[in-house]
Amino acid sequence: MELKYIIPEDGSPVIFKDPILHSEAACGLGKILSAGFLRIRYTDDKFDCHVYGESVSLGIGSDKDEDVIRLNRFFNYL
Image 1 (spheres, helix red, strand yellow):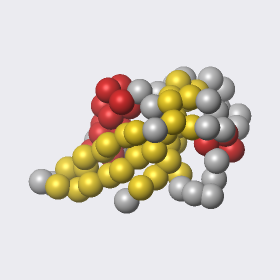
Image 2 (image 1 turned 120 degrees about the vertical axis):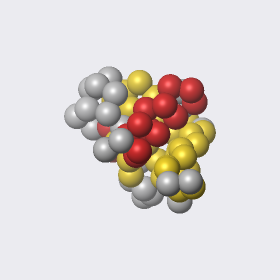
Image 3 (image 1 turned 90 degrees about the vertical axis):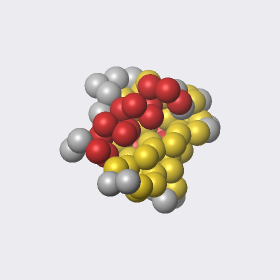
């Protein structure tokens, strides 16, 4: 499954799909730390996230190392 995401300053991921723009999802959330695209797989009883790319509408890219940690924690330890 391919999704979009943003990470606002509070560190809580916001996940969404096209046709929503990153800038639309970020509206009212304050400073955005990173943004990009997300693929999620479910294997061995856990979610495995992969991030890539950047948000053209925000001019911000993904932080591959930190974003994967945050997103895996978000999906696996809700």
